Amino acid sequence: MSIEIIGVSKTFNRFKALSNVNFKVETGELVSLLGPSGCGKTTLLRVIAGMEAADPGSGPILFDGHDVTCQEVGKRRIGFVFQSYALFKHMSVFENVAFGLRAKPWRQRPREAEIRAKVGELLQLVQLQNFAQRYPSQLSGGQRQRVALARALAVEPSVLLLDEPFGALDATVRRELRRWLRKLHSKIHVTTILVTHDQEEALEVSDRVAVMNEGRIEQFASPETIYDNPANPFVFKFLGSYNLFHGRKPNGSTAVAASPSSANGVTFVRPHDVEIRRENTDGSGIAAKISHIAFAGSSVNVELARIDDQAVVDAALSMHAYKDLGLKPDDKVFIRLRNTRSFDDDYVI
Image 1: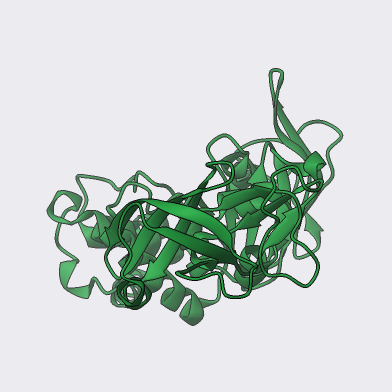
Image 2: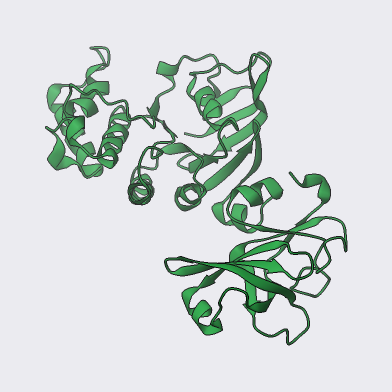
């Protein structure tokens, strides 16, 4: 099922949570709403679900082209998964997953044999077939979240909405579950919208990512496009570490102008695109001094201070490159920049 909202706004008292948002998810897509706290992503999810009403005069909410703006939550065929799991503590895993099926009106309720077959199938899908008789208190956080997903899928929703589903889990479990979610989605192909503030999570699992800020969608594109071609400084900054240089890079050069006031605008560079050299053989490098070196597993983070203005520059090197250079604090080196991105001053946040 496709989802489209047209010109939707939402105001809480005087706070504008959503501002004229236009957004379309194609059938079978997994789309992430990515942004900082308070940017409107959960409000947008709740408006789509029917849990919040958009402002009077807002445009329609369309499911497969049909206007569901005035349709109540229970008729939108939506599966909703929250960060808090919301499992019934007094029910076994089996009964938690079966709850939505048993709660249907008796004319629509499947027979007991059908319920058991359906729940068994779902528990196998989420790899919890051996945990059917356990209770939520006997499960890990990752297992509880998979039960919550199975319960949402039991009623065969047309749309699956996930509100920070892995937010309460530790980093290792989050990584495992997001890979599992991507594999699960490739099997079931349910149109899915995931709310997250985790950039890595959004980029890894999504077909497309909508980056939100102050109630607006700043950019909506594939993970590759979002990362390699950010629409503005906000998107660039939100998607990871960065260095900021005042002044545009000279034509034909990979290095940014050394003088902060040499031109209008600013240039952004990711730390992994800062190249460190011992010699300035072609004259295009920027002189800098190493301030600090920090090891980060397979990579090394190097903090440098420019010689000309003492501005801090962060570089991320592979362990191999670091060892080849033999770097140590207080060494004088030269930096050159790859894959730079320039924006006008008007867009700087």
